[in-house]
Structure formats: C-alpha cells, structure tokens
Image (cartoon, rainbow, N blue to C red; front, side):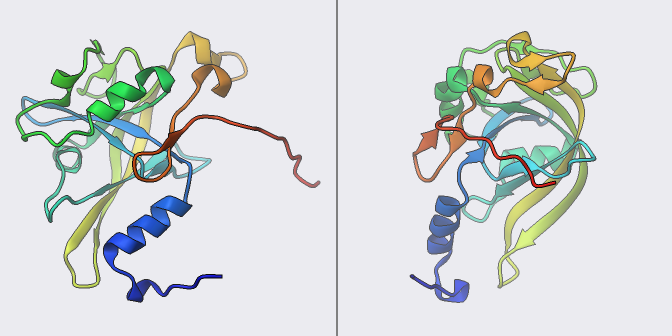
Length: 204
C-alpha cells in the first residue's frame, strides 16, 4: 500500500492523485456572460449538493494565478446555465475547453443554437438534453496554505430545469440515463460513458 502525506506532495501531484481517484465525475458545461460576451466552459469539479434543496456545487480553479471568466461572471451577475454533457455533445464540449481571450466567446468555436432562459438572462444551449438555470446561493474563496487564491467554490440554486422528452418520464420524474448517455470525466484527457451496471437493495 503506497502512502503519501499531502504536505509532502507538490500541488500537481496532489491534483493527479485526487482527480485520478475521485472518478467518474459529472461535467457541468457552464454558460455565463459578462456585459457583452457569452462564456461557455466545462467544469468537472461539480456535484449535487443536497437531496432536499436544489443546489449544485461548482469549483472553478484559478489559472496561472488568475480567476477564470466563468467564476468572474458568476460573481458579477450571480447566475449561470448549467448543461449536462452527453455523447452527442462531447466534441463540442471539448472544443470549449480552449483558452481564449476574455472578449472572445467559446460559442464562436462551435455551431450550436441558443435558446432563451426563463428566470436568468443567460441563454442555454438548445442541443443539450438536460440544462439547469441557476442563481448564486453562496460562495467561498478557497486559498492555498500560503494564502494565495486557489479556487472559487460556488453553491448554485437551480431555479428551472429542462429535460428533452427522450430522457424523462414526466409523470414519475425519472431521468432515463440510458437514453441520456452521459459523459463523465476521468483523469487527464480521458472520459467515460455508462458501462456495466448492477442493482443493490438497501437493507431494511
């Protein structure tokens, strides 16, 4: 059994070990905007935060010591549209991971139409089979041991949910994950889709 103390590892080593172990991770494809430019970026440090409240968590790391556009836009406008990624959109999602100038939109790299939102000003991607309109609920700046900003951690409250007819039973409110065929992040350039499944009943 290999054993490491976190303090003995470099930041890159810690990232490799954690992100390569906590897998698979869902991908949030997040649309935000500043005054004029729409920003679209995939974030894999993403999860449902509560079974009772409609909260999502999103951790957006700094790049070269600077806050990313996604985090800056959420802090400024306090809203975002979160799309979930399926097999049909994985190539477009990957294209939007490119590093672009602040005033250039990732939407210029892909050919996907937009659809208006109901509660937030940020539009959504029409092709996404699942998307959530969200508003900022809470926020925490995460710092490294030296006190330098490291990541922006958001609690986002879902105000509106959209599901393509092909992936939802509207009466039972069940998502058909086979029909959705979600893509998950592994480590490095590696991704995965649903594989072998099994069922376990909880003890009474």
